[in-house]
Image (cartoon, rainbow, N blue to C red; front, side, top):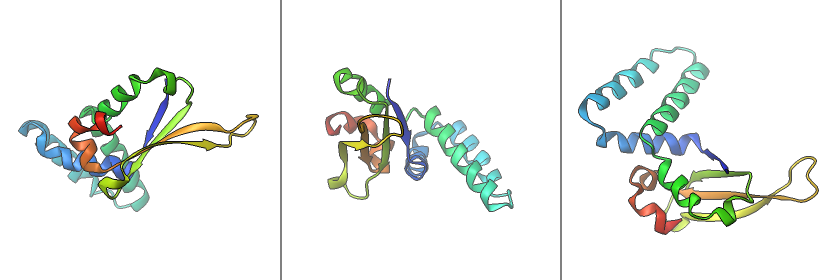
Length: 133
């Protein structure tokens, strides 16, 4: 199975966009927990906590599911890949996926890496992701 790493800034933006679709009780819990992070005075600790918080909610909201399910439909490609990155696209025309070669220490040949570029709105509203990917 391919290991996918989602860009933290993309994750944060997608979570904040998707928050509006949470049931009211979950939305209150989200805001309450997020607001507590602002009380952390050390900027590095605060930033780490925000990243962790948004990643946790990204997983809880299952915002990665459409990407993972779509990739699961292509085992001939994904079985040859060790890793992939999902990064932010700034414009709908930038959205897409590419295979790039990456040199890995100790490997005789470059290893293919999947790079997927998506807008936060696409992750927050995943219905249209499958055709795009």
